[in-house]
Image (cartoon, rainbow, N blue to C red; front, side, top):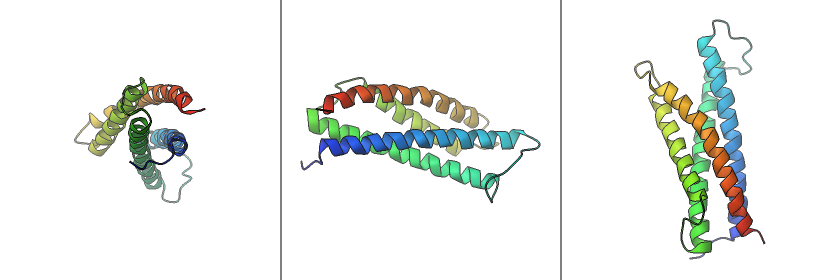
Length: 152
């Protein structure tokens, strides 16, 4: 198999992880913004021209970006590990990564279910995203340990 340099894979993974964390932060900010707009009688200062619709669109765009980056990280992890070691499961990074992927996909599913007819969806979405914070911390820590194996 003609794989790219593992150092390039590591660089792509590092950028993808950093951008995933940035997207997560932006999702938290826009999520809190939407919550405050929904629950407050007077919501001051709308920095976007379209108001809350623009915040919601930004939230969706950041969500799609984060999901894409996490799936890219999954693919890089599988290709890089198989290419370098020949098999998977050399550290707890595999488990933490798969848990983060599952949490992200559960978050996406719950987000698509949010409506007045499904009152369970919003609390599930928020709860999963709070747990995802711990998942990102765990996968970052185990990822740093794995990166040490690739560095000379």
